[in-house]
Length: 507
Image 1 (cartoon, helix red, strand yellow):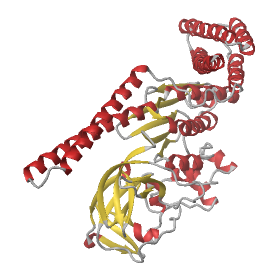
Image 2 (cartoon, one colour):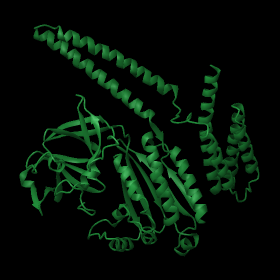
Image 3 (cartoon, one colour):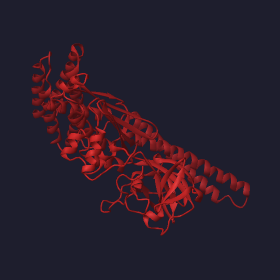
Image 4 (cartoon, helix red, strand yellow):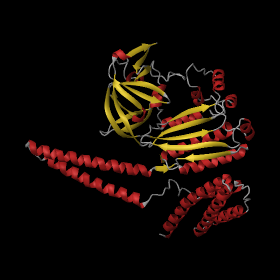
């Protein structure tokens, strides 16, 4: 019992220490650019947090952490308030975190949840049990209702009512459980602020980070992905996007560069933007570099798409295009596998903006259920623009590829059966679903549209190579396993057959 109590106390200390370190780090980073009036309150906050860390470490018998907190207190007192240099204190935070990590797995997955949220879920669970019992009793009465049509009708009406109430309660329970997985992005913004600070010090540049939308929630499963992707984008913005102080002055810009990190959410997705006021991307240099590397881009195509080609960024390409391509292909692939996408906009001499669009949740999503050659597929609803009956008059063949005349445009058609090998010829009837991903559109052809479902997203077995156009699997209500279509992967399928399209395909 004593051992269990001490283990619980230590776990609580470790979780709280991490939170306090985040607040110390945030206050230190803010103090660098804070004016004289704001500086003292920030440092007072750091002093209070360090003092509490020191006391708590002593309480749980961690003399090493207690001594380190005391050392950081001394470093804080020695700061020059006229020009505070916080690198030593930030290094102390890193050492403290390393010591915390050496305490084992007690903090893995730790999260604070209010009793109010837990109580609400318990109440919903109780209602679920009530309506389940009501449904069971209604079903029993319906089966025993006998031949009287009126009696049978009333009995089955009660079944439908109980089923509807159970469904509503389960929806509320689902929403409550999913909200437990949602983490405010401000927890990530703190880490990203440290990246900007460290890179700007290393590069000898003046860079400030402006954030907005820190309260925007993001599924915990996407937080690690976002951290890696945004960290990469921020490092490149500091190293390659923001000019030196001398270059900015020569261009008539403020000596300090600005990176804006903002997030917002709606009912379908979270949008996170990284925007800098640096030198921007050089379109002509990108196109020239692409030609040298064997990736010529046709007229009217987006040259920024070149940034996401694997291996595009050689050293020479980095010099010409502000280094934006390093690792972006891997970032894009990881984002798209989770149902998201990346958009790029830039103006030379003005700056660059990257926008990440991510689903609110990776585990449950609304999807369109399609049937083709007796096989069912689910297509994420967020990627669907429109569905329409497939009319032969609207279909045309161009160079042996089928296209659909749609709203004054011609869309390449992807026949699911023909692409996935369940049909030997493209169908001329059925339905076309217009999907959009990565700024491009395709028409997806299937035999039937069976409606909208909420599905639980499951990844494919790691031993299986995911086919192009497939992102995962799910289990339907009748127990059948079906594949989840990947909208970005569908755009990569060739309109001539099932092989992936060449880079630069029609978009």
